[in-house]
Image: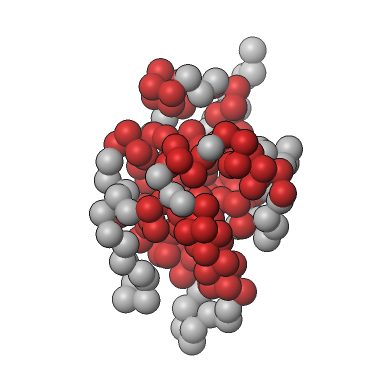
Length: 160
């Protein structure tokens, strides 16, 4: 982890807010449908993040993305290291599963899954070793919802 990466307390609401903020703003937009979904479903209570803390995380994440990179640092690498700092802080497996399920639903809340959102959700799933079958079994996330975030079929493989 880079020395510039923020350290989060273990399983802290700040770390969770940072991960959620990333998926909602990495496409460059904060869609009203995404916030509406969070409000309607009570996502803040489900993941243990007060709404004001989440909105503060969105503001910080957006500002960090807009800031020019420091000399010798890649903006993309810096972005991933900040996200990874939050991901490392969330150690509770149950909390990870809930966050992954929320990310899947939030990514499609505005009816468009941007490449940045797809990459971010794939990164989180891979980093935490969370699979579609586990989300389906533990939290009833339909496999069809997971399709955009699963690896593409191997080249040359035939579709049924």
